[in-house]
Image 1 (cartoon, rainbow, N blue to C red):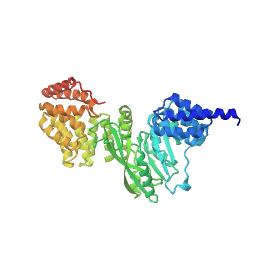
Image 2 (cartoon, rainbow, N blue to C red):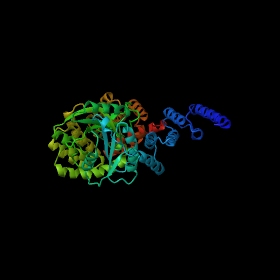
Image 3 (tube, rainbow, N blue to C red):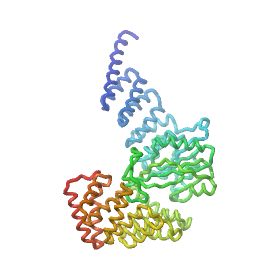
Image 4 (spheres, rainbow, N blue to C red):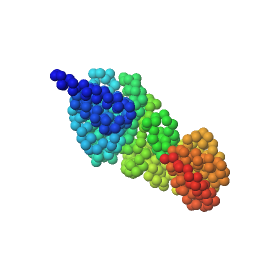
Length: 515
């Protein structure tokens, strides 16, 4: 190197150092980031720039410009694996346009899909299997969340018209097209046929597993690696409906994953060894449980949850429910009047607000299983929706005979009493319910209404003001309006007038409802 070159390099080195100091002072803008990147490339300080961008990503994880320039630096060094990992994160936490998707696929082509190293697996490799259609908006976050444990990803695409399949490929998935047959089990079993790993984890594209639970999941597999066993996992179905059966409020246990007003649980086997003995049954709400029980395979429960967001998209959820409803009747024809099949179909009828059909299906179910508490709770809810309040009360009381502590049954009994003009009885039930379940927002609202129509202004005001600061605050005015109309239709004009006055006073206070 001649003297002039040496003299020219030093100022550039000093410039890099000065820029680095500025980069870490605050969340950097695109201008200074690109200035630093260009200076690093000009001086060929690729490793230095790569380390700097790695540190910046840890300091400012939400800055996508940093991640983009880190990717560019990795590509300068032909470090495709590091670039791919960052690209996956970028795709997951942005709305990737066609240009980003094409660039990402180009980098993925340098590496190929995920490969299993059986020699180092010890029998614990995991295949993440999913069936998808038009899930471009959510499949990225789902796969990004589980990529650290997925030795392979199997995606069965049943006819996507968006770029779902391409985003799956970006994450190293092997994607297979499947002609839809109105049968989810057929699609799920197709995915099982493609698995090369020792274990299978079943996910949907609108689901996520928290990072802290992935370690637990791996430990479960290591603990049972030599056993034929099915692992039952709870799904937290997030919803904005605060009176879903067994609804629980979000309590901050999973601050990054929690959504909506809260969640209701469901549980099924999601994790199991790959074996021909385990496969899916039923065309809708498909399960591996029948095959596992038939084979005499043990079942164990896991405490880790899967976070499911499908119920938050009401429009999409309703379209799915309509499709499932049709398949559900076919399922009943196929397997007969099965309790599980009737329950699923009745729940979907309720989601679609087909209340008469829901009532008919629940009644058919209790002919088979007369002590099925959930049926009576839902029948009470359906009767309330069609304004048959006496029948709603009867079914709620029947549910309480089978399960005296079921909060939803107490709630249904209380609101039926209210609509029958017995606000005093309703208030007693609801006040006791709220004491036991402080975050039961639907019960708290109806308690406030009961206090209002009993002219206990202090109680109703305190409750309503409390609700304005809760996650349900934005819906308070609409809920009042709907209940006022319901009171009028039931001939409870005095109740309607008192609640109208309370609603007006609440608005006049100028309180801004949360949300």
